[in-house]
Amino acid sequence: MNPLELKSIIGQGLLSFPLTDFDERLEFHETGYRKRLEWLEPYGASALFAAGGTGEFFSLTADEYPAIIRAAVDTCRGKVPIIAGAGGPTRFAVACAQEAERLGAHGILLLPHYLTEAGQAGLIAHVEAVCRSVRFGVIVYNRGVCKLVPSSLQTLADRCSNLVGFKDGVGDIEAMVAVRQRLGDRFAYLGGLPTAEVYAAAYRALGVPVYSSAVFNFIPRTAMDFSRALETGDRATTDRLLHDFFMPYLEIRNQGAGYAVSIVKAGARLVGQSAGPVRPPLSELTPEQSECLAGLIRSLGPQ
Image (tube, rainbow, N blue to C red):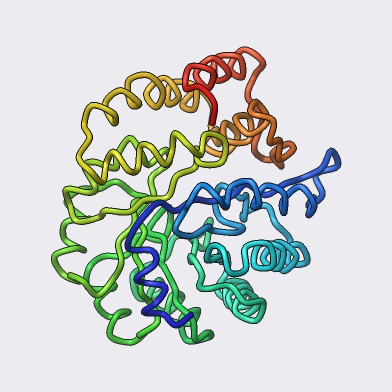
């Protein structure tokens, strides 16, 4: 898949980050991961991000990464495109990107480099190094310590033809408008805030029609219903789901740091699709929080 084909795919529909399965010893559980992808595939996501943020990329080792990407590509071949997560220090991000390309992924989502702050010149050098190391498409994730301003994105767009996507996880409306006005249709734009459904209508009005859904991991039918309702302007359905599920869900998620991932793994377990525990430094929901989540899921009906 060439970069322009990737840009077209991520410009429509619903995207999601599959959880990464771990066993009781916190080792990668490939059989469970493949079964997860087989379960999710028929629901119709436009593409899946393997080893992404919800897939706990930040906790994976260099040895585990190829196994996860290979399993995703093999399981979903001919069914749904796989975009691999890549990130961390520049050389590690380059190694991940090159390995993902070798294994047949359709592109990468370049996650933040973590920990250290960096100026715009450094961020440009980082993203450019990754883009130049591969031929397939790259989506940059604007979040955390990687916050690119419009002029930096313009520089990267001019230098890197395979940089085709911009995913925003900051939520600064003024900054997002500035990026969209400066870059126009040069990029495909994705909403990337945690529990993106809550922000989806506002982002759509800004010219960012696509987002990635974490809850697709455990309520895929509802996630697709919300996406279709948003696309068709069915305000009654989106308002109902926001009121009945997403806002109460946020109340649980906001009770603990790192719960944006932990609550998704809890949800998967509650619907009989357990991906095992989260790895430290993340922590599990309390039993009381899990019971509240179970009630919300039950209220949605069969998935």
